[in-house]
Length: 259
Image (tube, rainbow, N blue to C red; front, side):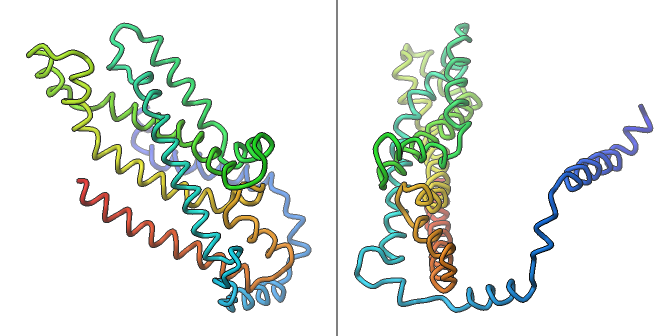
């Protein structure tokens, strides 16, 4: 036992290396037979020549219009997810229910189910339910965000400092009053930061939902890839990268001010 503790780092490394080797052994490498460095380099050269005329042409189907639609889908989905995550947070936080431990267990189980499926699966379902278009993407992101934000909100609620809550109770405040005067003021900066972070994640997710007809930039991207229009693929990918980068800067500034 002492020897294991002394070499625990080495043992962990060996176990991880063994897992990697086993996983690598099970992979199918037959596709390497058709791999061509010439094709790869040719594709890379074409990706280095983005078609800037496709960025904006006033048609409503250009990159700029679809990027703005993608951001709108992510924003609307995050708003829906945030609003609907609040009741699940109240249901899932253990410190709000005392001895009634079954209630937060049920709440956390529901949140586990909601976040078990990626947005793409929800998008496929909602495209069948409400038809193709941005609304399906909004609902897909919103439902997934309920599970993610609800879990994070509940965890922050559970580990918050209870001193302010006890102070409010000592002067006769009820549960609703302690929530508004003790809990929310402490949690709001953290919750705001989590919401902004998941809005960024939502933009990245919304960029792929168009692959299944849920609006955004994903559909033109997959069509351009299938048609081997690498100049259009390049400008789309470049636009997504710049958009995510600018949103990261913007939300980062807001998060710093919230602290």
